[in-house]
Length: 94
Figure 1 (spheres, rainbow, N blue to C red):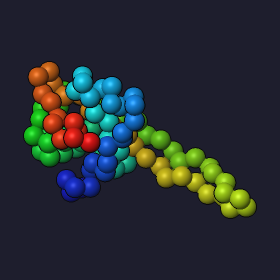
Figure 2: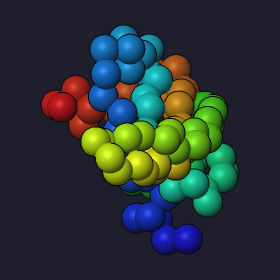
Figure 3: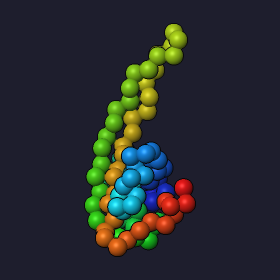
Figure 4: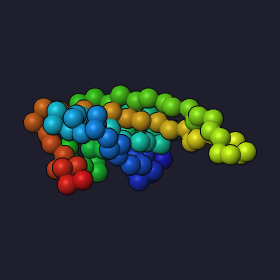
């Protein structure tokens, strides 16, 4: 898997903004990626040292829109903790 396919986008919410001050960042990642790939990709893109990576898989939910039924997309979320003393300056601009 190529480096640009692993990390899709950041998860930006009130809860994730609280973690930014502690060096904890949350991203949606490709469902096929593992913790090692996520760690290496994050370190290479953002030039920081990663302490740990926690991942969660979510299945899509059944949704109805009028008479139509469907399912939301499956997704995988990664919570990335940086080593003490490291900071991610690009996230402060968002």
